[in-house]
Amino acid sequence: MSRKPFSLVGLDHVVLRVPDMEKALSFYRDVLGAVEERRVDSFGLVQLRAGQSLIDLVDVGTAWLRAEGARPFTPEARNVDHICLRIEPFDEEAIAAHLRSHGVEVGERGMRYGAQGSGPSFYVRDPFGTVVELKGPATPIEADSPVLKTERLVLRPLRMTDAEALFPAFSDAETMQYWSHSPLKSIGEMREIVARNLPPQNRANGSFAITRDGGLAIGCVNFYAERDSISGLGYMLDKAWWGRGFVAEALRAAVDYGFDTLKMHRLWLEIDPRNHASVRVAEKAGFAVEGHFRKSFFLNGEYLDSVYYAILYEDWLKRRG
Ligand SMILES: CC(C)(COP(=O)(O)OP(=O)(O)OC[C@H]1O[C@@H](n2cnc3c(N)ncnc32)[C@H](O)[C@@H]1OP(=O)(O)O)[C@@H](O)C(=O)NCCC(=O)NCCS
Image (tube, rainbow, N blue to C red):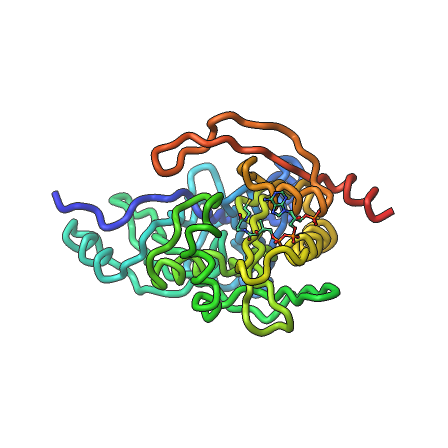
């Protein structure tokens, strides 16, 4: 058997044909608590977020499904239109070759909308005729907004072209001493990190470049591991600019944005306790220490301690007076 050129990351979304949208919404949204995220009225489509995944409800009464001969739901009739599996990596040729080698007919590749935004996908059918969509990662977008301005800094969305300016910091042993991975060796690795941190298309979070005037990146602040309105934050500054209070200033702006615009509930930082400058930055930005985890982080053959800092929405409101 040939080796698979990808692995399954998770279920991206399911699409259900429903005969009565209001009834369906009152169950999935109101009873189960899925959150309405997007509507495409011309398709009779309502997309509901369920954690990392989406539940798409499609009204069978709309023209495009009727044209396909879709019948309203009855216990006998199929009510699942298709399931979508997120796969990585998305090497089109390798995937198509693999599927064809197993006698699977591969549908046309298209850019389709899923839980992380628009990305490439193929439609195939399982042996019983159920349509399975195999979906690659959402194609990141380079955004011009939001821009956060502080007294001395401009935070703008990270762009691919920031890789060059950030590489000196991310490849420097002293700067990376307390980071979560070793110094980078190549600009290619830097580009991969920047690409991973461009904002996903349907999320407001992502990474900001720290700049003096909106131009050259001298560092970055990023939201990560976001779920349920709880997010981690990380920061990095080129050492030419250390000791001027820049990161504390940038972090305060990111925290304001997190609570004010992203409607976060909790923001946290994981800091190596030996990183005194970072501990000060956390304190200056209003984070409170929550716990010291002993030997909880494995890096370069060593177990290291981590200290968790957090700020809650109510703490932030109090700080703002
Ligand atoms: C940690 C880092 C973000 C700090 O940024 P910065 O802009 O220089 O920080 P600030 O100027 O806002 O504040 C630094 C504070 O730490 C203090 N500090 C700096 N080095 C220190 C040390 N060795 N011991 C104790 N305090 C120290 C400074 O005096 C200052 O405190 P003050 O404002 O009360 O005087 C920056 O050094 C960096 O990017 N490091 C590499 C990446 C990194 O470690 N990121 C954090 C991962 S959790």
